[in-house]
Image (tube, rainbow, N blue to C red; front, side, top):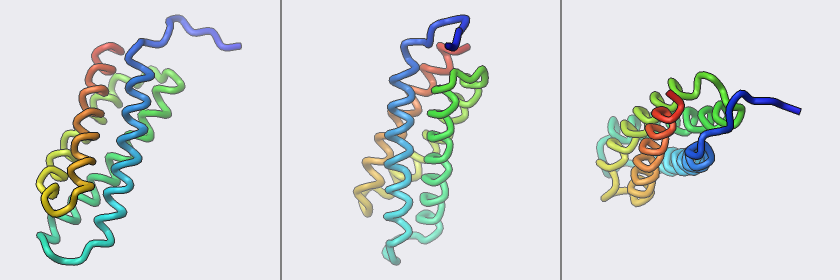
Length: 123
């Protein structure tokens, strides 16, 4: 039986769920972009793929750390929010060419907001 000094914050489960959803769509977006050929700026497409992969990894790590009530949650959530915003900014530039990027950007913005709330609550 585990004993914790304090109960998990109410933002915790919402943030975990939002990060999990964001990781999933970022992985899907990156995979979909890898299969695309030409038609748009290759450098922007490659940046999108890299950011989506980084964002997916960071969101998945955030889920793990929050799930075990890591004392480093605040710092990680702040970083996750920043990367989610960067990913969203790049995906927003692609939304007209790549519909999944539009969905990904929306989810990244939601995740950034949830992570900022969580970081503030954990502080």
